Length: 313
Image 1 (spheres, rainbow, N blue to C red):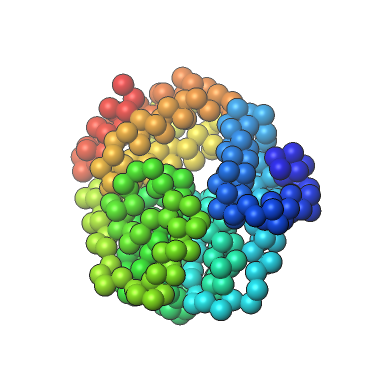
Image 2 (image 1 turned 45 degrees about the vertical axis):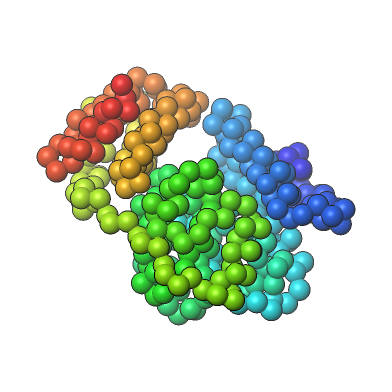
């Protein structure tokens, strides 16, 4: 399967998946035990510099195409409508696409919106469609704050939210983001939504309040990153990409404060240190820029700066 998808041979990947289904292998097992490891291996190869961005995108698009084809084998939908989307700043569509295919195969009418959907636009769409539920994918901690906003947008309309995604599956962050249910595998989403079809949740979960630093981070993010880049870079060619990563660091800091989990910052900093040199960032530039970013977060951002500084030690 990995070889087929890396080479873009979707028809071969489709035949392999159909053969597994014909042999009685559940869709969940194909998604969790075949496609998820394939996607993880693609990510590992990209992080190590063995695959370029275009190669990784092509293989990921092949996985997406495969899931679309699998979902298209379903009969005409008989069940209620469900909106499936990834939170804003989460560019990964695979988790949502897997759930969308599982729901389609079970007879739901699925409206798949894809990756990185802003909460305001999502709210407008939900208001127009009025689905049974929102299935929200969040695979990156950079999207935690946006995920909470998406949950709030759905709850404002009385629509329950089932969440899933790599970073939610093994922690209790789902409840801290205000999700009404957590689907660890696609089959969980099917079962939860079938139960909601018969008996919707009596009360929706409480969404978390924004952190006090939210407005200041939104207003000052570009200035903070500019100050960090000016202090931290020695190679101009790395500046735009490093600036993009520093914006993600700010998203991580806000998300970590929102769910009260400072270890998220440490993990992201370590990941950036491990993968940065393979993608053109000098390790010294990374550390200097992160320290400068922490120093620039003063005044009403002092708590955020302290959290980042602690992750650098």
